[in-house]
Image 1 (cartoon, rainbow, N blue to C red):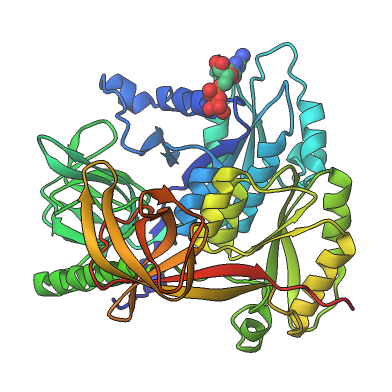
Image 2: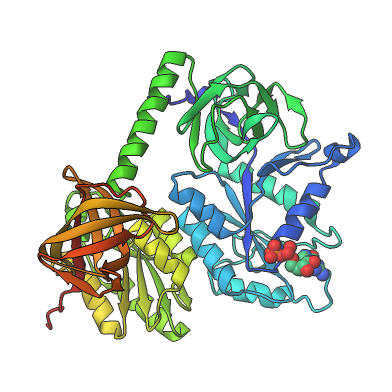
Length: 517
Ligand code: GDP
């Protein structure tokens, strides 16, 4: 698809698209609801906003603001990891009776990594225990200095409970949008991002799409991911049929051939043949990737140097998690001070605590490396690390972390993990068990096969699955390993497509001793 650049003279101001973030229980959901209720135009007509993933608020005579309905930095960064940048402004919700908390810090890091400006909403200002000055002090330490204190950050005192300050907040968002000079060309074919999609019984696939450029109209031919279709109807966030959606407006789209994924880009294409070919090509690519077990490779410290040389990386982004704040600061300072000509180090986020999903997601979306100091990653983070192939490194000595990063920048870092192939096992026969699924009767052709090995299932020299064994048996007994020349029974975990003739290549991942300097 060719990118059509717009003639600057055709660009017109567009409303801001806003996401709410903040610590749990600081009032994101309540504030979204309260904002929804201030939607005067909607109330007058007796219309209730529907949950379609985004909604708009009209500020009569002043403008319009679109809010994404899924608050939180996790959702925000998950979208970004899929390549979708839809938020123009982040509203950071901080409870005025509480202050800066771990997820507040995370949210700031996520917004900044995306280059999104932050407007602060000091929520729960109705409470007698609210202490906005103290909260602003906390924010200042994170370089968010309120205008009141001579800084640049807009801080609005609000209450989701009483409605206090909400109209002012909306006006401030419009002000921020003006400063950002958000523009789009409404007079062209539409493109944007899928916010969510579902399959309904009566109407088939329904997708909420945020128009980011152009105008989307009934009758347009839309391609989104692996799906396409002629727009049969458009519905706004009040459930009302509309004929078109302009830039920064979200609408439900009826008429697609299936449900695209959230975060998928959509485009309007005039030629049906082109649309169909595009969709076919995409489906094929996705299937190929699934078979090969391919997932996009993220930056690792080991290939930092070659990436730098090729000019692909100009900045090394890090996420640092440690057991105490003092270590976070010591590491951040020492790392940022490593002098290098060709590359800058930027710590996207530093915090106290184990490595969680949100850290890994941020690394995925920003191509960053995660450093854990005296901490571990939690179970869910572990799954994501493995799935996404993010480089996460654990240290117990600050000096070692700094040395590794320094060496990586000079291309001197030795790989720390190595794969050791242990054996090849051939599947001779398949037995179907109603309880466990496919069991392979196999023979170890070379080396050995152990219960805890990593497994690659190879068919006609193509890797069709990568994973682990669910069980390994000799005759009726569970065994730890089977040696060359012996028969065994195997069940591959999470893979029920085992076939006769498949080869199981078994391997171990070995840590290579790092050389002492
Ligand atoms: P979230 O986790 O950030 O989405 O927070 P919620 O919106 O679920 O709010 C957490 C709690 O704070 C709920 O019990 C709300 O009723 C309460 N709450 C939210 N906003 C306000 C407010 O402005 N004033 C007061 N007093 N309570 C609030």
